Length: 245
Ligand SMILES: [Zn+2]
Ligand SMILES: [Zn+2]
Image 1 (tube, rainbow, N blue to C red):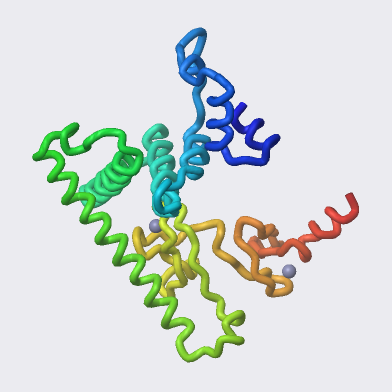
Image 2 (image 1 turned 120 degrees about the vertical axis):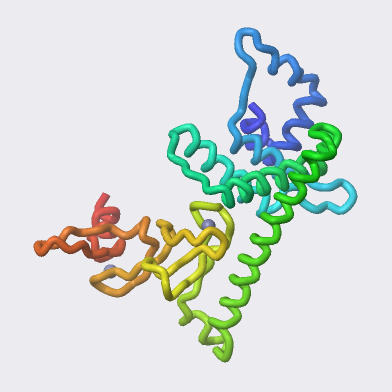
């Protein structure tokens, strides 16, 4: 309903919420468990939270880091649900650190409760140490990205930048924007935070014409000798097929 209203009035979700509330719509009523409470997905909640801006500074309440954290958290939850996870102690520390950092920021921004009071002074201190460890490592990984980027473009004239094949991707493992070209990676890219090398977004060359496209978009053809070749949108014949439709 919020979505519909936002679309029909060309306003964002938060504004739609305020309009409906001012018109007397009872949102509390919708949450009562008779017969079922209305629920929303995490993504919908995030869309809503993204509309929130600080009334004093006009700055967005949730930033890119926060959205990345949420995405990572969803991935982690899915893996746990499917029993597909193994966490060495160091990673457990980092996971908890990342979680706590996100939660602490969130409850603070939206003034929900006092985390220190909620968990007790001692636990809070442990959480703080873990959150610091995570923040520290993330900062280092981000510094790596900045340094490597500077290296890649150093001495290159501005008009030649387009010829440099250097991208930063969002890592599908840790959801940070820290996946950059690496010589010792089999895919050519490596995450400076979690060392993951795989992503469907990494651009690969078409074996026919040499055009670069993401691995996700590239069609793969099995050749007679058993090898696999990449075919871009045009060379796979897909372009022609789409045009004929
Ligand atoms: Zn990563
Ligand atoms: Zn091609």
